[in-house]
Picture (cartoon, one colour):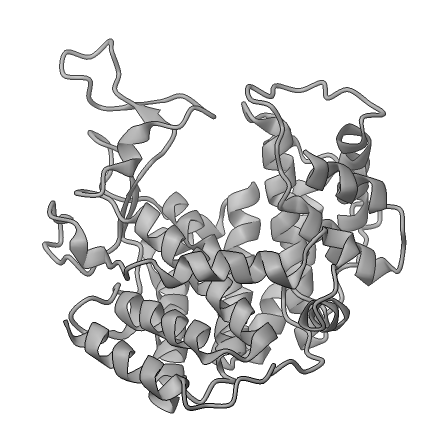
Length: 389
């Protein structure tokens, strides 16, 4: 296959290159210079109990993964184009009260395994590709070993660039509900994993194997996807969401605008989020009612905080500070974060519906970024509890 031959050539060339760490004191959306420096020097980074060996171990596993593509599904979307991404509304189930089970009915918080059907749906392919690209890019950035860059580039080219296998930059058929809709604006939440990829591609820019053509193709892909989010009926619908979907929509828009070179648009999105998202979703006591109403309310509160923190991190890159913004009646991001802390630390008992045990170790990274921003140690206990769990 085309990409396999190309990758073989890339890896062969990589063996001839100097393998020196390429670390510089850069701040990414999800990584800080002090952390990168510590990891590159093979120290354990205590705030996140992370070390270079654990990162390399994960990347070595990713080296063995075969590239996947949206074109591997055999049941096509309504467009008939295998390049269109398709996913399933994960909380929707066959309605046993209906003769044929359709239209499906919602059961909030309960994931229907039908979404794992690889013949129909692409979500697992997208998420696994993004995850592997991240592991490989980070390992490359910290070690300078081109084999990691080569594999990350191969996965990127197959999923996003190669005309025979690439994903079209739209989510027209994301989170479909059988018997109801073939796609929804809510499906845009599926591409949250691509925000991290904007960091990963910046890491790959240090590699001589990451060509100018690849860089331009990926910037064009994200620019096209950004345009689709801004102008499509699904994108416009999602922009009006008043819960975590709306905040993640803005976080994605701003991150993709920044990556594509449209800093002005990124700054505008972050700036407008003060009145549009913070004032509308966060209460003066820090609670977020739309998330508290969910069947996994503590998880969704955490999920929305991740979106707000991501949006604030984009703001750091474009000179818009929403970390310290506050409405006249006291609504702000820090208060929303602090609202959750007693429940993570165990000093208070969660009073809202939570149908599964709370397990969010990944939130430790977001709390660490918050700690860096505010120059405080007040989140240390929660970080350690999250990692221990």
